View 1 (cartoon, helix red, strand yellow):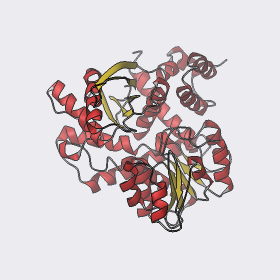
View 2 (cartoon, one colour; view 1 turned 90 degrees about the horizontal axis):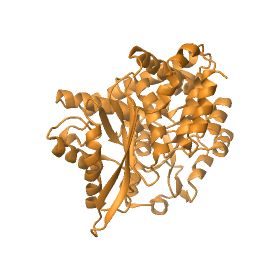
View 3 (cartoon, one colour; view 1 turned 180 degrees about the horizontal axis):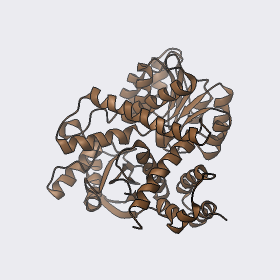
View 4 (cartoon, one colour; view 1 turned 120 degrees about the vertical axis):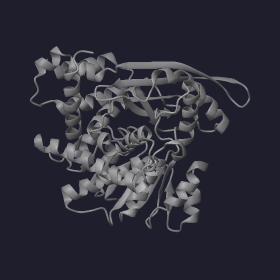
Length: 444
């Protein structure tokens, strides 16, 4: 049994209760099978083991008071996966589904994503099973402050720089940063996604969605010699990534015809009213009200039925494994020719393999949704310089970074004679950079 196959078996056997993490690792290992690698040397240096196993897994209790003065307890995590290229970097997630497997997969993916950008950043992820839905601002503040009372000892501007993720936006970052600053008595760029009033970058809220569309634009130009105008687009999700992907797609001339939330989806052949969703999404399920306010639109109670709508481009921007094999087959049958991931691993392994087999252009999340971390690096740079960059400056740099990320994956795909396989292209190019950094620094 060769080195890669042995590691695949060990991962499956050692982590049977961490399916998301195993899925992410196996997807990577599949990408490097068949490469002309010195497996004997890699095995001697245990490169794959050191790349797969996080450098540090931190778990801690978070106790806090709700508005009725009842003590509540949640679990907090920080997975510091790799610092081979730079300080750990990755978001914090507040969601009831947060567990060790989810965060290990996200930290693993973040490591490759950050390597692919060309920026000097390592990979991490963290968060808690705290659910902000239904909580008051005061409860979210108290939880965030108590979360930071433990997290602060593990982070720093040159050590680990967290950002936001699902459930952690500008408000939560503010509460976290305020407590960090009070504990440490210093104002440094230790968190990104801050309000621009105290060092946050413009475009950070829009970055992942905008970056996704810039990546799609490069895919269309390179593979089909076309552009995004007049393309019908469906987007899963209705949070910041989905919303701003929609705004940028419309700005560039596309027609966003459907979006979803956890309850179902809406379809509007006249084009989704994104301003309406932006206003009403924070208030709860917006679908029925949207249909009443927009003639010709309709809604469904099945989120997956979004993928049954005829479209040119599908952008899964909600959550992992939302796009499965059945929906992938329906997309292909309905003429969809491009899928790009705005969320982290939203496509199952089976669905991804089917789309690639059918020749569908596929933008993997570790490349296509790297806009957020790219602008986070610009925010870190801005904080170091104590200089505010304009919206247009940041947006221009974001587009340039996304173009470079696409080119990195595409050039590698060409080198392995699979020019349409950006999954392999992204994984391999990131792996080469991580491997070189690890070997250069010795066994640590």
